[in-house]
Length: 135
Image (cartoon, rainbow, N blue to C red):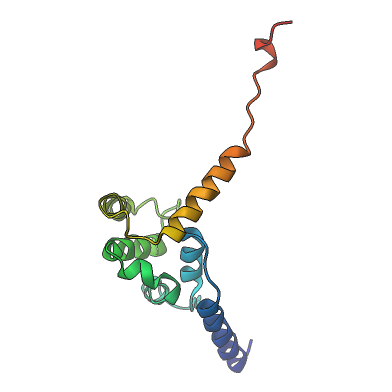
C-alpha cells in the first residue's frame, strides 16, 4: 500500500472509531488496541496510541481511570505466552477499585456484559451420563 493510501486508510480508521459506538468492555478494548496500530512501532508507542483512543476516554477519566490505564497498557505490552498473564497486579488493582467504586464504568457497558453472560449461561444443557439412568 502506498503512503497516500495509508494516510487515507488512517483517516477512515479514525472516522470509524469516532462514529461507531462500542457495546461492551471487550469491544472497547479491541477497538482501542487497533486504534492507529502500526506494526512498525514499538510496544510502548502502540500502547500509548491505544490509550489515546476516544473509544476508551470515559474509562480513563473515571474514578478507576489510573488503574484501568495501568492494566490496559500492561496487557498491550505483555509478551507472555498467555497474553496478560504477567499483569496480575494491575488487574487486581483495577478489580479492587471497581469493587470500591461500582459507578466507575458506565452502566450501559456493565449491563451489556451481564446480559451477554446470562445469554451464554442459558445455552448450556446438562445431560446425565447413560450409566446413571435406571433401565
